[in-house]
Image 1: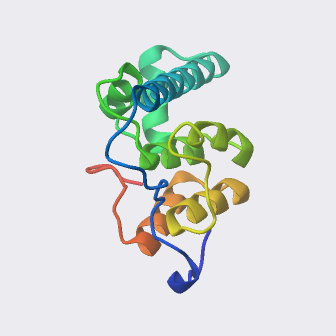
Image 2: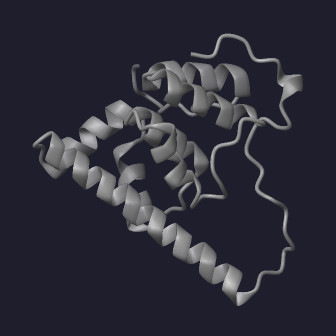
Length: 158
């Protein structure tokens, strides 16, 4: 739980990847696509592992992950299938909801613009939640309070 954040001590509210040219080489585009595919596969494998560990059906797994991570079931499915891009906000909720270690979480973030950084508020809140073992509701409260950005699911009670 993050009680008090002094915004002036941070470089930014949200993670900002290193600015590059608007022109990308074929190699850079290929790396981006490859990382996105690896990340989708990691998320899918983590979901499968959760299913097996808890002896659940696929539908039960999606329902439990929706509750634990506060990620809409359709969003989870579309993310895994590649219908939508993976966002850092998705990863924040996925890693905190599943109570990953900071090391494990960073293997996901590394493929999405870079590991978690303490110099921006959003990443810092995620780091603290992972290290403190916060539940998803506590993380979302802290995130929304300190970033002033809503990440909670609509029409869901926490």
